[in-house]
Image (cartoon, rainbow, N blue to C red; front, side, top):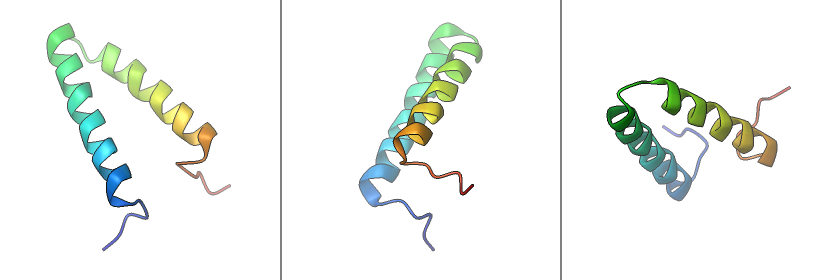
Amino acid sequence: MSSGFTLPISLVFAISGLLYAILMIKAKSFVPALILHFFNNLLLTWSGIIFLGY
């Protein structure tokens, strides 16, 4: 089964998820992690790493 991403990119996604969790625990709020996740997805979409398929 494949998600369409290479192993290094998948590892970067996994590490960023851990960083979001650490940020959420340190801030005691999900809002900073949510904002960071939004901007990260925005940048990945603009760069073409994530393709929306339109």
